[in-house]
Image 1 (spheres, protein in one colour):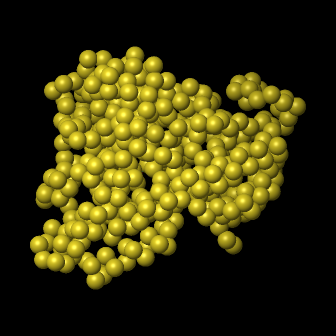
Image 2 (cartoon, protein in one colour; image 1 turned 135 degrees about the vertical axis):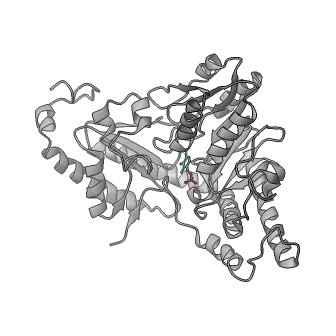
Image 3 (cartoon, rainbow, N blue to C red; image 1 turned 60 degrees about the vertical axis):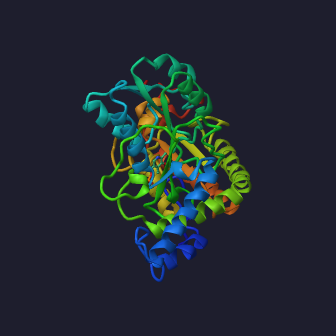
Length: 401
Ligand SMILES: *Cc1c(COP(=O)(O)O)cnc(C)c1O
């Protein structure tokens, strides 16, 4: 059976054009960029060329781009790097309650080490209120980290406005741009950010490579200590094939982003409309319009997300209940809880994320299969049998029984 892959937020297939440009760097062009003979210097030239391309795509300067092993490293580097380099100025860090684990966990780590953390709430659509950011800033605030686009519900945060507030207060501002880069416009100056993390495997590049933008003058401590690579900020021999592939992926994304976003928005809206027409007792999670072009996240009352996921898998559809990182635990997603969903409804959530290879027929297939799955699972739910006649969606309805 052909798999219909609708989980592009977790990872994307590497574009064949990307694989093609990477291959020579495993074999004939295998040199170490730190070696002074020509084999090494050719590799050096290739990665510096790519650094330039990625800088241009972000509206940054080459010297402000550091290659990392991915989004997780970029976030850890930014948050711990700024925290430890600016401890003398203060120990307060502001973040949100809907961040990826790769931001939440370094924040929790710093909290254990004596830093003071503020986790801002979001509204029912997942938006951080810039006024809340302003009010949370104290004389001790050294860093604000708020994600650009949410990986679970697709909500796009008001980064530009938050960045302006951070700048007014002379506080460093980091954004996790892993879900947005290559999908919607990302420009470090337009967004008013000082640090920004991206990852290649979310935009049809290889896994294990990413970049961190660090604005000139920003004080950070190095992430890895060792050799002099990456201007002494990130030791270790560069992942040359990964970097080259990342560059190609960014080039392709820059060319096709607008066209793809349009195509994905059409598919997204078709799926949303179709699900609302065919299934009752549901709600769309995340902002209705200020969301990623490729993200659909629904809460279904009286069904378990995991059961829907397994049933969909049997029909050849790969979807998700939220973040790949939390799906192995039984705790409902912290993002859905932060949006105000009760536990049992957060448990009944399903995420579809589309991409470059998604076809119109894939959406038709989901719209054919999903209503049957939901109906079948609900027919086994005693709660649903009792509540069948209630038509309005209420967050308390499942508890009232
Ligand atoms: C995937 C993802 C990450 C982690 O990136 P890796 O390259 O897999 O480490 C971080 N933040 C967000 C929002 C993501 O979607």
